[in-house]
Length: 393
Image (cartoon, rainbow, N blue to C red; front, side, top):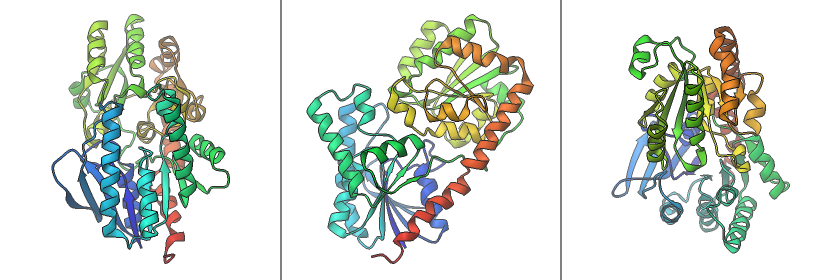
């Protein structure tokens, strides 16, 4: 069986960043399927690599998190056109798996479906265009309506849909009643991330000896609302809580966050450069609480952020500053909801004061990762979806 996977942002563990598409491709390869990935990269020229049995085709289409709306749109369109053209080489594929965002991936999948008769499964990790509309990036009413029509058209054209969260699954079901929607959330790599005792040498490396550590690892974009992370650090410093904050990642807001940390004179905050997966594991190994942050925008509450599942797998207390399904899942079990700096100080203080309470919540996080989000379990569920396409064409 041959699967054509479209994802503009395919990363390997060595490269860092989100690696869901790598996990999914590996899950299919492990079941004996042939997987061809078409992706983009910040380089020159077209190239092909074999990544652990995955045939990866790289289009020279630059993209960075710091890009504004116009540059992102140009990048998305360039990838769409390149992917459709290259797909002609793989017209023998049994099924196409198209991973958004962007929503325009669906246009590529539809074109491939029409030209070569290849059915497609559409993965929805973020609700578009709800996200840019609610965040104010798209204001033109005509353009908004066009994008909403496009979204519904792609959903209807897809053979089935994969949603990354229960909230996304519910939202899509309301837009296209009767459509088959699978729920395959992001995965917790419970083999790679594990609860461990703090290594003194790593504590010294990050300057957190004897401190309760709260960390954020991931994208530093506008949607992440990380000014609120800095506000929590400021409130903790003011109340003399023995907490050190680690902020690690890359994105459009990095410069702003560095300037704001300096302006606030935050002595309890360290901003670390973007790192690969091993580096994230080091940071989590000295972490007590993993901070998950979004702007207070309703659509962002539906997301399925990788850092949440990494934190669960590593056995960390989870702190969220937004509502939605993740808040419902963790509150009073393995995490706290802290929408304001004051709520953060109040909520985190019992865990700073009681190692026993902290340990109980951390164990609950690990248990949740093992029972509900383990990579092995979700990989099998994902591969099962493709059984219906064997010998269909």
